[in-house]
Image (cartoon, rainbow over all chains, first blue to last red; front, top):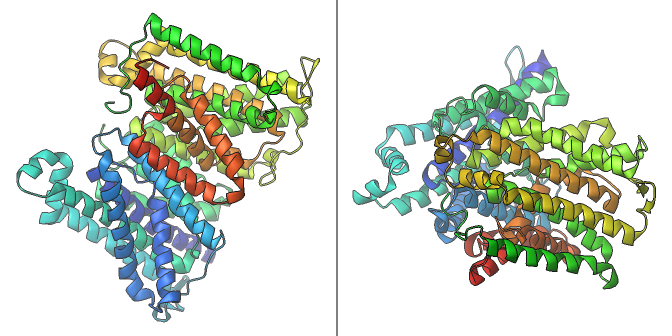
Amino acid sequence: MQALYAQLLVGLINGSFYALLSLGLAVIFGMLNIINFAHGALYMMGAFVAYFLLNVMGIGYWPALIIAPIAVGIFGMILERTMLQWLAGLDHLYGLLLTFGLALIIQGVFQNYFGSSGLPYSIPDELKGGMNLGFMFLPIYRGWVVIFSLIVCLGTWYLIERTRLGAYLRAATENPALVRAFGINVPRMITLTYGLGVGLAALAGVLSAPINQVRPLMGENVIIVVFAVVVIGGMGSIMGSIVTGFALGVIEGLTKYFYPEASNTVVFVLMVLVLLVKPTGLTGRAA
Amino acid sequence: MTAMTDDSIPVTPRAIHDEMVAFGIMTALLVIVPWTGIYPFFVMQALCFALLACAFNLLIGYGGLLSFGHAMFLGTAGYCSGHALKVWGLSPELGILVGTAAAAGLAVITGLVAIRRQGIYFAMITLALSQLLYFIYLQAPFTHGEDGIQGIPQGYLFGILNLANPTILYYVVLAGFLFGFLVIFRTINSPFGEVLKAIRENEPRAISLGYKTDQYKLLAYILSGTLAGLAGALKVFVAQNASLTDVEVAMSGQIVLMTLVGGLGTVFGPVLGAFVIVAMQQYLSGLGQWVTVIQGVVFVVCVLTFRRGVIGEIAHYFRRSL
């Protein structure tokens, strides 16, 4: 039973990352109509920024949790201003191709300087150790990752679904021309939205740094799984992305316990099944 | 589909004539290669990728479907041909047949899943499916995991043509490429191809005219996957191995890049693009990981400033269809 709970926890942690990443993808797709292939690379950059902050400037985990998403978010906003904005009005596929190119560039540059092996990032002192919950031993850092991700996800949901800013955002997704006519600076909102989505990816990167090590290709496979998560959940709903992300992480964790050979493929197999039964995705509306 | 294609040049007798002339020039150039002193291995490899890119282009350029998983056909055909040749000891023609048939079967299965969604979702689904196959091949015993299938025998095609001879192998690969190219050329100039273009331009309208668009898309997908498989089977004889790199996402990305550089939706663009990208890898191989960065830069530059690709720009400039 211990092993089962341990795998369940690993599943929840991976689910947190899937949720944070697919949430960012959904938010970006809503505003920019772009599937951000560079999401995995930007997730990796988040982890690297945390690593540099610690090893070059001596800035620890807690400030990094704020600084890294902002830094990578600004980098993302520069990408949006200099490149992505020129794709508005073109076929969606060009956005995918451009961001795929950006992912190749970012990952290639990091691989040149850091190779493919992992760099260690230690768990902050406050979160070291673990608790005995009676039925299992819970490393505190892992529990923290799950709870903190959940709070960030729900916070993002609240921001978009329940605040005035979120209302502007949703309105601009539906009809940008009309929202502009009301005097709202839609291009700036688009830039900020991209920064927000990218910041969420970087945050996931910082959270995963102590668990998965910091590697130039750490986002390469994750982004493909997250694409499958997005296909399963549909990008129509914020809450849908969060729930699907966590649920698939847990299912992956359970597969690791019951049938480890399939743990790499279970999300893709589920995607196939969902497509056969309900092609629009679990929360998606007909396109 | 507004911006994907801006070639408003209709298929006219003149357009067909232009393409025939271009096809004649291309064939003549390729036929004389063994006498020019150009490294034949390089051209053979480029020809395999050219066929692969042409097959990919059939989907995106004429059906509006971006497959981000075409490496799965390349890899599947490679593994199946390699296994048939090395372990079963089949003759080359049967080996090619096994690999191509395996890719065709894979295309039927994955096509039934992938064509359920359009546009961006289609790209993500094909990508996820190819990743699924990557993990299957990583674990399946017959692929030998990280090592791949090594030292695949080339044998005698039809019992007489010694494929270990580079010149003979070159002409066999060239024949395979020209066969695949002509199949695609015939397809896009057929009534079937016209319906595909109609679906690309306006699917709801094609449906309202009574076309079962899903069947057209599935058929195009199967044809594309099968020809990509033929390219994979031919590549086995050139490289004499089949490995995981052929199933990786990076490979799918390269196929997209080749077609993008040459020109999406052009007849000859993918061929030129394949030669450009294979040459780039050949000459820049000393730069290690920087090749990935350069490929990324080419992607970005192409999408931002050069969306028609080389052949597309030439065709646009001369107002011709190529």
